[in-house]
Length: 257
Ligand SMILES: [Zn+2]
Image (cartoon, rainbow, N blue to C red):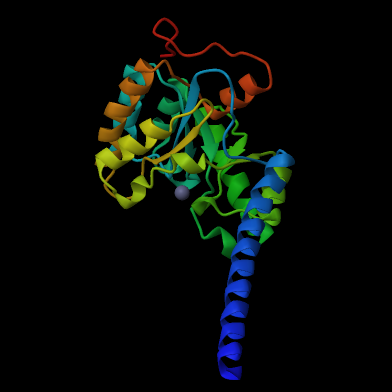
């Protein structure tokens, strides 16, 4: 009887401790996002009454897929945000210029896409500043938004980006297409369409491995969301709209060439 009670006691303790740890971890994750979000230091999405969505593309420019994506965006009068790698902008300056020329926003995603957790604050600052300078000299557009590689963030990363003049941008948790893992065109399409809400920031990649699924998914996502009444804006426009000012939205008659 005593042994039974001991076993029961051990099991109960185990369950309580495990549950406690689970709640603790969930709480830490939640606090993290709310903490940075409340201070306005990191943006995951910008909920709004306007029917607008911001598409974002990481890791480019890429000589094959970036032009294909730009063609599609142009076809649907969509503006987007490209989180570019500084070294790739040096390699493909014409693509970066085209992104800006066609009304898109260029944002900073470090110079080498290094493992951000292994960088010292000084190294990270250099990565960010070198990329900013490259973008500005190639395109004439000074970037103001920064997305850390891998979406990793902490207080030091946020402060380093902030000191360099950037706002840190993540993406809507319900709009992580995981297109880098090539989950299938249909899965990418279904995820974006079934989760679409006003003010979402959708995460795609225009560089990495084969991006055919991303391109093919866009061929369905763009017309379908447009049909549902959405307009596609840059992330800075999304933030401006939230703050009360209304930049002209992209439309058939207002397509920047
Ligand atoms: Zn990346």
